[in-house]
Image 1 (cartoon, rainbow, N blue to C red):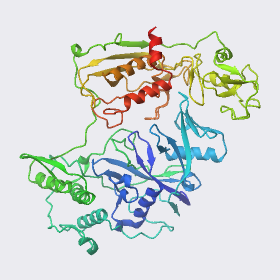
Image 2 (image 1 turned 90 degrees about the vertical axis):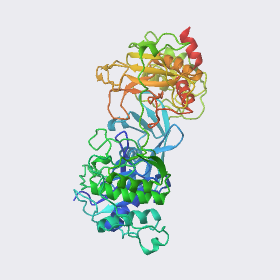
Image 3 (image 1 turned 135 degrees about the horizontal axis):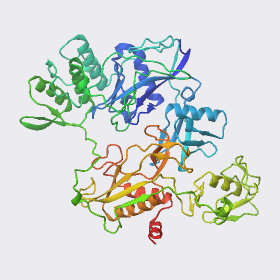
Length: 619
């Protein structure tokens, strides 16, 4: 016995290799199908409980999520957590992303935050679990330890995730035997999509030539003849792109400590647009339809075709020797099997491919950018400015307040009328002195501001922790490297009337300096040189000039923990987004993107870089 009781959370694996939780409602829906056993059909149609997940079906035999319109497969898993943790109480922690919507934390992170919240800690540092963030419960904010950028967080109540009691098996494959507390199976869904999926599964299982339909469903379905499906394509034929899922025995291996996870029952679907997902072993990979055996390919082609009829997915072309014509995806699937069996070439329309780089460009085609001097810029390691104490630096930006208002200092959360609550290394100023920042007017203990300055880059600048107004010239901790920029004779999607500015960043690995998280320790530099792209328009050149200022101020990159791989002590982007896809936008880092140039100008302004900055640097 592993646990007397546990809360079950269904999770999917995203393209960054992180397990993301389905909502409580979706987890309840999946769990109900699992408990219903084989008669439920072994497939879960997620659109029944969440309309945003309409394209997705989970196949419980292979523990994969299948996206109907692209054919993408992602692993899913059934994970166990302590019933006294956040999912067992219906608590969800979320952070606000750039477009103002809320994104739930990974379950492991949410549980860690909730535990600290229940212990009434003022804050929680997430570095120990691989994230360079601090959650401040007093302000309900998430603070990036490297850049000091803040985002709002929130705690909300939702449904409690499903509970299981009794003995949890060490290894489990579907169908799982319901435990003693398993709810009675719900009646099968009668929607056309599920009726068709279940009927085809039953037809294949019983060896019949056509789908079996319950009487109630038959009168709602169009009449059609029985189709006898020929053998699937041989090894030399390409499998269909729009259908398929993995089948096979599945074992689950629970982990230790509080949560118990089925590690080889991988999880994973996304409400967005899933891309290639890393496998359970951490290596990037995508489950290929070529791995399906003939029987599974035949069965899934039929099932997927009929599901697509019911769901009303738009038509796609089937290409053959005689040309192409648009047909319903269901007919495309069956037609593909028939044509392959007859030895004819078949090619269903495929999803767009990732296009990271432009076509090859010769040296003679690469040109300098009008209005921008040179074609490259180097940075070297800069030492912290010396000669002025923190008190002397802050004196330029502060006005003393003799009679402070009766409100909180938002740094230490003590009243301004009382001494500072900061307990770290002691600054040389008195803890009861209060000052007002000259431009934004926000008021703090001077003691707290000095402590905050000492914990930063100590470059002679100060950033208001409330409104982010920057005093002085903000610089970063970017390691030494080279930035190249030039024109190439190709256009970006969405910008057909201009050429493209290509930026190439090169940063080698090295040793961290005193301004970095772990001085004296080596750091890695993955993915360099990094190629980025801007349209050669008036606004694109403006962005380039400001990026050059940001590069000189060492604000483009930093050293920290990668949010993609979880690797620490590595070079990471520093809150200024770049476009790294040349001819596509599958990951959100490409074109077309009508708002990108405006967004990156706003991000640069948040770092204290504007057109005035470019003029000052030139002078």
